[in-house]
Length: 198
Image 1: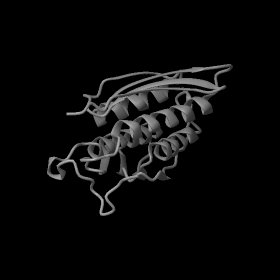
Image 2: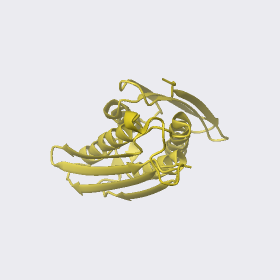
Image 3: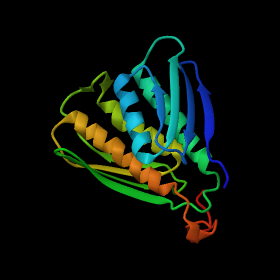
Image 4: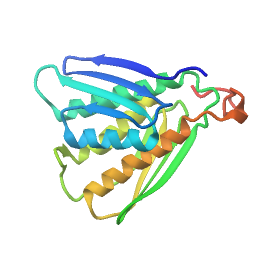
């Protein structure tokens, strides 16, 4: 069976991002973005999606939360897309409805080859730990666009902002973890009437 692990390095005048992603992992994560809450969310995504994930980021000049989160989203999306190659034999679709105490979050994905994100989630606080709440949606959108997959996120209910974010990232991991799985019945075929997911 072909290995799908990918290493990627992205450098701009603002950040250096190193990513290693293995869709056939066991949920091991080593994440250092300089943003503790973001580290926690990426680790949660990897754990529940059974992705092995390593992320290391450094600012080139001054630390800037926006550029760190955005550039990780770009690099992680590119790594995911690259790891799946021509997407032969994968399930393509995945979804999860995840509870976390009073919160219920829904995430649905399609590894369609077309980047799109619709995120319906609101937060009471302006920050989640040491990360701006607005950056969560920005990461999800950037990840989907660069990963070339369709992403729908709906926060069905909830009060605690930390629980909301964590339920979303758990659901994202489970949904993508399902979508990237190989389906033996496809016998290496593409699950599309067009014959391609590009």
